[in-house]
Image 1: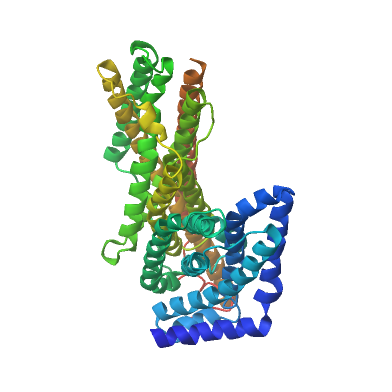
Image 2: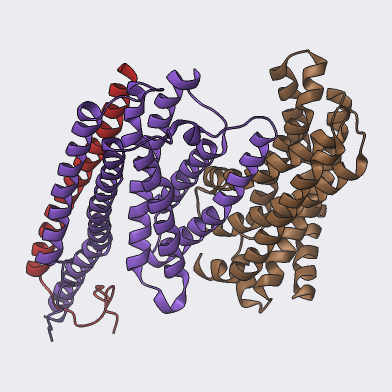
Length: 223
Length: 261
Length: 60
């Protein structure tokens, strides 16, 4: 399973490296979102700094939708999906591989967005380990659920509108928890508030990664 | 050589099931009417809330149906569909019916809760765990229904919908607890606890119970009718196709005979 | 009391409307099924082979 997952992850990441969609389209979209949020919240810097955690995570969520769409669409050409199914690769491995590829792209995006938030909103990071851990855990959760829903909507023509609608409510706990941890980790927050939310993220991740491993194969067989 | 293919028989509903549905429907209407009469006129107003308490005869009822009955049924039915040993389109159709009826009850829950909330705390909406989870559940339900509209083979659609229901079932408790933590770090009482007056007794208690029963019966009736609709829709989807194919075959055979002649 | 009446009316109204809609859908579907069933019974049936075989060039 692990070997297959590395194979699939490598394939997805190589495709990404060659086409650079993530870098040239998704990341700028994230930055644009941050700018729009700034316009929406008004010139009051204090308010922007306060809203920074939430806005960061909302931007990450939207970028996740794009990254997942991309991850699904690379296989919609030339019967690649059938090829994968027949290839004998362990479906659990495929799930982990695709999710890992998405996760890697998300991490890069988060670095970009994080820098953007610090620069644009004046957010000051006081407890770096909280920020980093929350990003790691949040990424795992988003990548896992995103990949699952991507697989579910893989064959559908209406995927572009359905996927966000289906996926975002499921991702809401990550947004909630991630925002709270960031609030704890930025200037003006209390460090101890972060821990219960980190635990929630761990539980969320565990549940959905386990679910994905079990369920990815059956999903692929039916769509 | 011509042989008669029998047309797939239209799904006939047994007399007993038709009558069961009808009786449940009638009972539902009667108990609901009774509840309304008791709730609006016979029961006394509350000491604290005055007439507003009358909403307790329908709001918890619709909430129970939407959040527990419909949702749990949809999740369970989806699980049973996915489980190979119990796989049957019956469970899929039951889940779909439960979700659709559940959406209606969910909207009723949100509206009645909102109407209760406005005069009580002055706001149409409060971001507490119960309300927020209800709203998220509504969105998840709507997503399920949107997914079902995508044309597909019944088995493919069933499997897809079942997975979505399963993920939603896993997510709702997580959302509920997240929002609970989110709120309790700030303020206290949840919506319903503050309102279900502990001194509810006598005619109020009985009416409350009747309200639950009545709305459950309404749900069951709607579920049965909606399930039947699902059966008919699915049959039509393939039945019409069969007839069209047969007619085309007949055309083709007619042409063959002409050519041979 | 206005709130209570609004609440009751909206909830019961919604349930009522949805119930009517269900009944109407069921009736419409029953009629459609009856029509298709009758058409199927009277449609000319020649081929014993599966669907799609009755093409002019023959699919045997």
